[in-house]
Image (cartoon, rainbow, N blue to C red; front, side, top):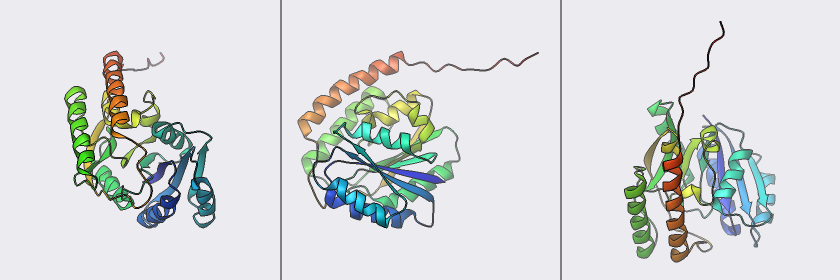
Amino acid sequence: MEISVVVPVHNEADNVGPLIEEIQQALEGRFAFEMIFVDDGSTDDTASSLRALMERYPSLRVLNHQRGCGQSRAVHSGVVAARHAWIATLDGDGQNDPADIPRLAAAQQEADDEQLWMLAGFRHRRNDTGWRRFSSKFANAVRQAILHDETPDTGCGLKLFRRDRFLALPYFDHMHRFLPALVRMAGGRVISVKVNHRSRSHGTSKYGTLDRLLAGIVDLLGVVWLKRRYSRPVVSEVARG
């Protein structure tokens, strides 16, 4: 398997170095891989840190957004630029463990299923505050009840998916929170794999509970509308003569 690791970052200057080293250690010698870090309009030293790290890591590529466009757009930019057929995504805060990428890859290869388009990380033991754990559990329960995506944790940034299938999905801001539902809507299969979740070592979260809740409600209604309007034709080409 050849893997492009796409990591969106915003003001994560202290986290990018350790995270890149961990990705390198997890994948080197096991996969053909590249790392694509997408700096989404950072205002700290993230950009300069990444430029310096490119000298040490030949597999590292860096994309810059001149202004912050959000996590979904950063992921999309990285996937468009990727060279490999399979994409692994990680959050840039270091809470996802790169050592879990081979676990997702092994689950994909064991399944041996062409319709398995996505493997989603499931943070079964969260290293977050009690309030964040509660709000995440509540949001996941509401989303599952409405979208029936059969995925216990869509908020986990650690995912492995097919590049071509991702790029065929309709794009919208915040789509990363609904990827399993979108993949299933398009006819693919999604499985969840238990992964490690770590506490944040540096920096602060870029999301507040209230703004995430309000955006999530609007986006959830949009995905419901999209599912009702989406159709999957069965196409066959007529042979000549």
